[in-house]
Length: 207
Figure 1 (cartoon, rainbow, N blue to C red):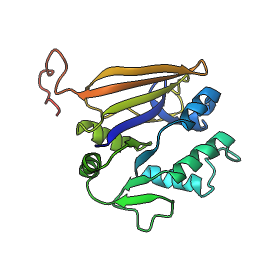
Figure 2: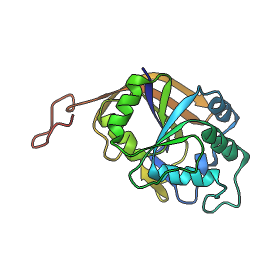
Figure 3: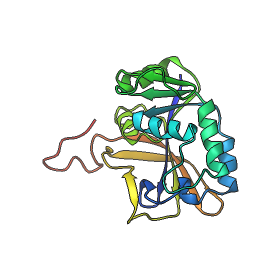
Figure 4: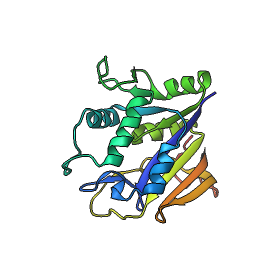
């Protein structure tokens, strides 16, 4: 049976990206990059928007505001190109142009449930915040990992990571710091039906 990892990187204030900021907010260091290169083989899960963005990078499209890719960005995109990827979308058309991609048009939660039960190895989300929320709500997530970068993007932050999440209890299983500035924390998540003191009056408990 496969394990499912939701893997996100955020600013300290919980944004997945920011207008005018490069990838990794420009703060990835040699320890962090070496750790990325040591990750086990993984099948990546993504939605249509993440596919369009990342496949564009793989085809040579440069992020807005940059003249070109930095070497570490090129290496990250190359690694993603080589890896198997499952894309959930009702709008994309086959054949997908990015190498090693499989398109799934059906319900993403049920498809991931089937992948977990019949496969082996690690499944990991990349980007795709709405997909992450759906998988967490469904109770399918085994590991929840957050890389926290030392910036606050209150003025320029985009894509708030945790909006729309259910209440979740997190049991920490790993923590470490890279390059003296990037904090990595990993948890075992448990979706709560209600807060510890009970559901607020007038609210509906969430499964």
